[in-house]
Length: 125
Image (cartoon, rainbow, N blue to C red; front, side):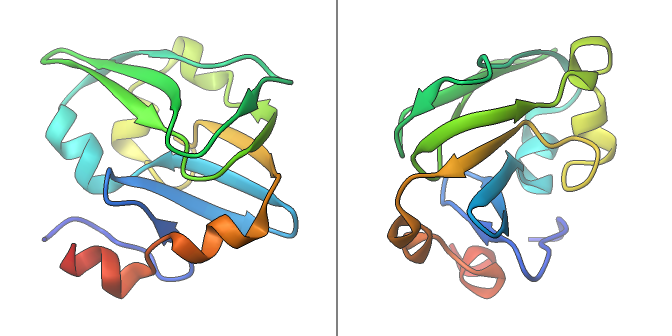
């Protein structure tokens, strides 16, 4: 895999990343996922306050080539969404780990984080 995989983040086999800050988790799609999707043209983000469950659909990312579901890597309540993506969804392509984050979640069950992959495990997955 030649795509960027950052240390210090947690990953899923379905190519979502999680950045933990205390009881909150910022979630996005990996560099690999944005390469596979190609040019992202639309993101359908959930609303703030929505309760999500690990493994359920979190949002939808649409590219020139396909429409893909993004799955929740952890359960919790959405406390923020990246509204910049409404006008500039292509930010996910140029900055998947920084400016292209999707949502921030207040984690319900911290034990779920232990089921996620670290950078080394994700590279092998």
